[in-house]
Length: 392
Figure (tube, one colour):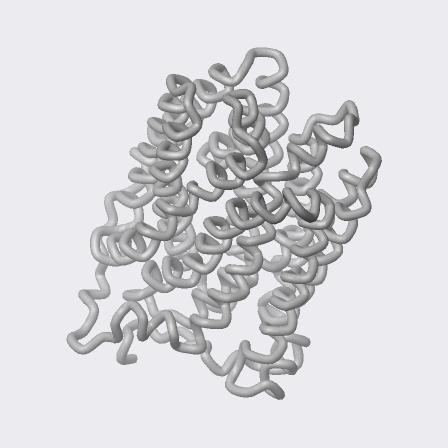
């Protein structure tokens, strides 16, 4: 939770910081999107490292980067230097999220996997709730530099806590000779569809992260953008609590589908939002989408991977999300000049709908089985059901 709180304190602040340095909407998009460069370049590598050297090391790499980069932001006053820092900062999420997800999946028994992943993933929205609200308040009262210093302190506390984790060494051995290559694994249908769905979710989140603070500012409302993320986080926690056990009972597909529907609804509400309650409703819907869909996707990845490849599988699948983050802000930054901020959110609603259609037709062996699985009426044929090794 300390890691996500540290990261989230900067979420409503950096777009405004870019503007304060003279950047326009496209510059905001490029800087926010640069975060995904580190994610894309390192996610798979760090996933493999977590399989080979243990999860604790990868968690610590993420926290060290999360500690150093906010201190760097506090010292720079030029957009190109900020862009460089954001690219490096992406490594923190590539490491921490991959190591944490794999560790939770390792510890969760198969029959309770969805519920445990749902509960343990609550640290993300809880950190978002605290961090985004705190960051927005600190920026208004204490200024940008103190927001970044506070984020560094939170990451340092998280790093100190990892020292209490055991230094685990993988017991499942190395990957056997002849294992599929990076692109061969990525193109397997058990991975490909999830990666594409995560790409579309990443596009939505990337557009939201970059341009929501600007949309609020342009609305001239007396409204802290961090409150949007607070509502999203509260809704995410509530939905995780409400649905965690249901994923093991009704299957993962139904909850991925429902989550995508909430994402679409959130973007439609943002398109029409002109008042504070409308922004808060949109935030709640976005949080509900994340609270339902993301734990279900994490459980699906765990179901479809064996223990000696789980870190890499998490890394590969979440590269779709990373690519969406990378593409969304710079692409939309240019488009928004022509279509406006509101229509950018409407475009993201269409993308979420495309993700839902993709999942309903491509998540299983054929479109009939995919539709049944997405509706909670069919099994996941790619689930390994407790297989412990690649060849098992």
